[in-house]
Amino acid sequence: MLAVSRHKGHRRVVKQGDTPLLWFVIVTLVALSLLHGAWAARLWWPIGNELALARAVAGFPGVAAMPPPLACAGVALALALVASAATVVALGADAWPPRAVVWAGAAVFLGRGIVGYTAPWHRATPEMPFRRLDARYYSPLCIVLGAGLAAGELA
Image (tube, rainbow, N blue to C red; front, side):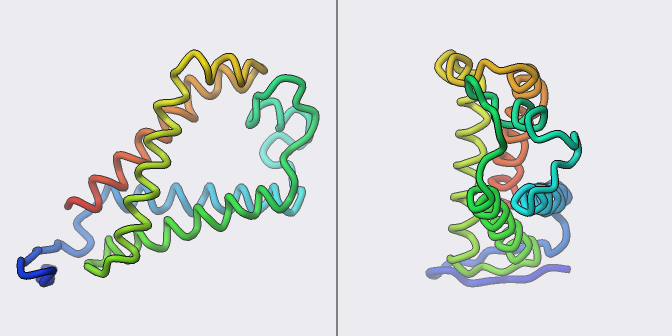
């Protein structure tokens, strides 16, 4: 289904529902939001042990506990906001507020993904298994999410 929107004198043709990468990103963001929400509720999934989970997801020297509930809830809400805005964009809306949120999300994820490969980040987050998981999964996923948000916005 095609939708035509007018934005400041030009036409933008949007293919509604024809953004599989963006839908993958949306589903992933919702899953990550739910995961952070579980951590805010102090449910240590998928590892079950707070210290082991903290070492897997935080990686800072001497990490002994997961971040506080408010921090986890804030991340959960931010992820849900970006997922909601991306859904609006994927459905063909051309309003600037959701588009701005999608672009901001793209910038944050791309930035986090790139920073994950820098020496200062490696020095700041030396704990294992975070260091290995970050290089193998977290940073590449952030790059894919950021690129997917940007590509979905440009589609």
